[in-house]
Length: 218
Image: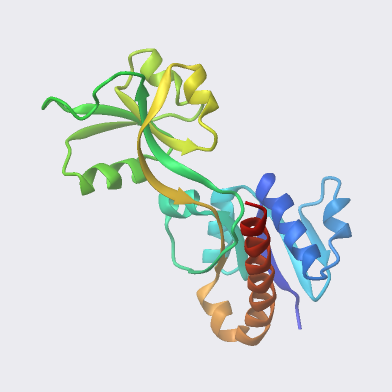
């Protein structure tokens, strides 16, 4: 039988997922020494595909990968047809509305302009507040938009808040917390249910154990 194929988001989520795999006894030496390869065999009949976050969803949705590891932020922005089955507990950050320090964003009745890399998330957030807004999509440093007068505020991923502070911005309101999630192709979940559940059970136990250790340290 062909190996289960799992797409990993390149970068920090890739590193954290490999750490998790190694914790449950999967040999990831091929990924550790990948060079420029993008498809790599790992232990226990698994094959890893390294991809950008949005492409992880595409590969899983279309069935060329059985599973994927991707941030909840990408899931919220891109959507798709798949099962989201496990919060992996790493890659933690939050979606937030942020603007210039001291500004009163919610006062007045004029329409606000929001800059964001995540226009869908921004629209959904303000629809829930029944606010009239205009969203401008920004690909690079979204913090520049209010500094240049392009927008009144931004909707973006915030980790420490240092970048906001250094640019005279502050969080106005937290939208939601996000972290890395394990997603599964709908057909694979039916056809390879036993294999997928065996893997995810091991991953879930390790995630829970790590969470308990973190709580004890705190």
